[in-house]
Image 1 (cartoon, rainbow, N blue to C red):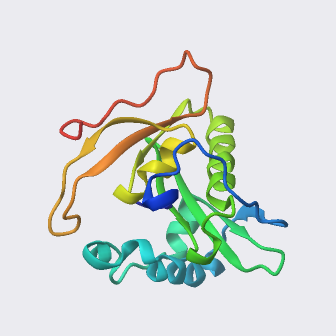
Image 2: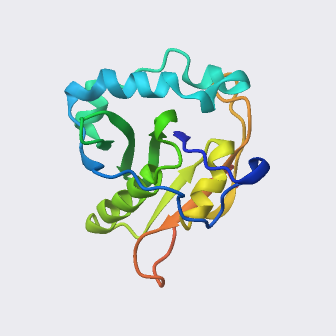
Length: 186
C-alpha cells in the first residue's frame, strides 16, 4: 500500500481537522481506464513526498493497465483534463491501496474530494470501514478527514524501511465494526 497525501499547517504542523484553504473549481472524479496508466505512474514517480529516505518506496513504480482494470481506481481531473490525483480502493479486504495528489494540487481540496468519493464507493459496495496504511507524513491528512489510528505496521525491509501508521476510515453506520488490524501489524 502506498498512500501519499500531505497537509501541513503553520511551521509544518499537521493540518488535522482543518478544511482545505482553497477548493479547486471544476474538479471531476471519474473511473480511471487502462489508458490512464502512464499518467498515474508519472504522478506517483513525481511526488515530492517520496524524496529522500522515502524514495526507494516508489523507485521504478509502475501503475499497470491490468491493475486499473482489476481494481476500483478513480482519478480527479481539472477542467482541462489535467490529472490532479487518484486513489485505488480494494474491497476484499477493504483498504485504500493507493492515494496520491499532484504536488501542484496540494491544498486545493483534491485529497478531501477523493476521500469523500472513496467513502461513497465503499458504502455503495456494502463496506463499513476502510483500512489505510499511511505514508507517515500523510497521517495528519487522514486524521483530518476522520480516520482513526488503530495501530502501526512494522517496517518490511528492503521494500519499506520505516514503520507506518495504520488507520481506519469509517464509511458505514457508526454501529458497524471496523476492520481489525492484521496479525502482527498493530
